[in-house]
Structures are given as structure tokens and as C-alpha cells.
Amino acid sequence: MLNLFGFIALISLALPGFLLNRLIMGRRPVSVALALSWLSGSLLMTLLIYFYNYYLGGALNLAVIWGIYSVSALVLFFLNRHWEFGLPDFSFKRHRFLVLILSFILIGEITSCFYPVTDWDAVTLYDFRARIMLHTGDIKTALAWVNMPGYPMYTSLLHYWVYANGLWTAMPVYPLFTFSLAAGIYFLFRRFNRPGISALVSLACILAPKVFENSFIAYTNLPYAVFLILGAVYIFFWTRTKYFPDLLMGLIFSLATFWVRLFPFALVSLTLMLLALPLIRKNAKILAVLAFIMFFVICFIPAIRPVAGYLKWAVYQYYLPYTVIFAGLFIYGLFNRRADWYWPLFYTGCSLVLLIGTYIFSRQIPGYYQGIPDAVRRMTIFINLPVIWFAAGLLEKAKP
Image (tube, rainbow, N blue to C red; front, side, top):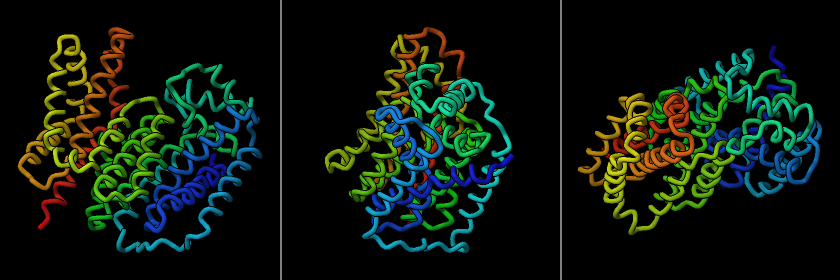
């Protein structure tokens, strides 16, 4: 049954997020700040609730979390007082393709209110911790009951937020990540392309394998992918424009991935900040080729070869034709003097992290990784999005 107050409370996380985005982005178009408002608000509120309870020792209840919400919103509004707040310059006719995409996602958002959390890890880990917090008002008690250090509290605190506000299920949380990804990609790509092309790239991103599917699975894979990709996109823009708010948003979203899951893929985009240096950027093609060669050389090291073989069928063959498309685009880019090598470096860097990380995991629990191919596929649902951005960038560069 849909609890209207609980649903509104979930959507209301967009308010402090919008104020935070507006504070960071300054005079950038309001549409971008609005598109990513729920994502930033969910990040801000979960961190504040965690800090208040875990470090300050304050008990959690409905009055307390709304007090934290109100104080944060008022502080951000005060900090934004020097900016003029106006309605976004948004034409439904001009952005009709985006409206159509978001409409389908919103239908999924509404229908998710009628389905319970069912997936195993969600029930026994993320949702269970939220239920414990709901009854005890204490994060440390939840962590004591479910002692899983590699799983931060981000999604559990979002589950707690909706339960404390009266929703019976936390499933409406997850389509909002798809909404944020679609809207965010659209308005970011819109910086240098037409609305129709921007909508096509946005649609391609959310329809990439397993992305939209995870809108209805209460796991951390989709939130992680959304933060990672949007962080990488903002850092990509910063390496081109040196616009400081882009760097700040890129750092916030990239570091936020460690609040979702302790996977190290964000280290790749953080390392690629070096492309802002003229000497590094000048030799980006050479670095991309060297990284590509390094990846294949490591794959043939005898100790790592079984892991490489496993990832070949579990990830790269599973995600065909994206792997082949990337290889073709990489070769094409070698002969395109205007190609930007950020996304090939990001893709190859993440592949190296995946390979080395899986090898380390295989040493800790020998043989176990081979029985969970679906887990590694969910973990890497972001891996095809850089291919889309690389392709879109080459097409943009090819325009006369």
C-alpha cells in the first residue's frame, strides 16, 4: 500500500541536494542542479544521520532525522542566499525525448511502491540493518548484529529513512538512481550537443546491460555505478574545461562510491585527473596503448591467467557486443587525431582494477569466485557506459 507521506519524504531528499548542488555549481544552469538533486540529497542526509548517531551518540527517530533535514536545508539555503533562484529554463517541446524517458522511469518508481524487498543480500544485509535501526534507533547495534565491514551504511540508511517515514517497502529508492543517471547524463552531455542526441546517449546508458534491471533490485550495484559514472563524467569535463565546480562535483561523486561499496574503481577516475596536465594530456594516446598492452600482458601471467579466463566469459563475453565495440573504437581512435583518450583509459583502468582485485580475492578464498559470475556482472554494470561515452565523443569530434 502506498503511504503518501513516506513517498513524499523520499522525494524530499531532493531539496537539500538541490541547495547543495546550487551552492557548488554557482551560475550553471539550474536544470543540472535539479537533475542531480535527489542523488546529492540522499548522499548528504545519510552522511549527516550517520555522523549524528555513530559519532555523536544521538538516538535516531522520526523527529531527529527531520530535525537534521531541516537544519541542513536551512543552512544550505542561507549559504545560497547570494544566488538568484529562478525556474529552470526547460521547454517540454525541446526536451520531449528526455520527458518520455523519465516518464517511463517514474512509472517504475510508482509501481515499485507495491513490491517488497526480496533479494537475498538485500533482505539479510541492507534491509535487515535498516529494520534494526528502526527498532533500536542505533547504527552501532545494527552493525553489531550484521558485522559486514565491506558494506557501508548508505543504502541501509536510505531504507531506514523510508521506513521511519511510513513506507512499507524500500523498493522506491532504486528507480530514483536510474532517474538521476538518465537526467544527469542528458544535461551533462547537453553541454556540447543537441537535445535529441543527448537523449539518445542517456537512453543508451540506462538500457546498457543490467542497469535498468537493477532499478528493481535492492542491491548497491546501481547506486555505486551511478555515483562512479557521474563522478567520472564530471572529472572528464574538468580535464577539458578546468572549471572548478566540475572538479568538485567529480570528487564528491567519486568519493561517494566508497560510502556505497568499498570497490576501488573510483581510483581510476581520480587518477585520470592527471590528464588536466598538458604533458600527460599530450601523451594520452600513448598511455592508453601502454595500459591496453599492460592489461593483456598481465592476463598471460601464469598465476593470473585462470582469473583472466574467468573474467573473459563471466564479464567481457557476457557484455558482448560492447567489448568488441570498444576494441573497434580504440583502433579507430588511433587514426583520429582529435580523439579524447579519457574514456579508453577509464575503461582499461577499470579492467585492470577488476583483474587484479579478482586475483587478490581468489587468493583469499580459492575457487569461490568461480561460482558467483552473476555477482561480478552486477559489480561491473558500469563497464559499458564508458564505451557509450567514448563512441559519443568520437561522433561529436567527427562533426564538421
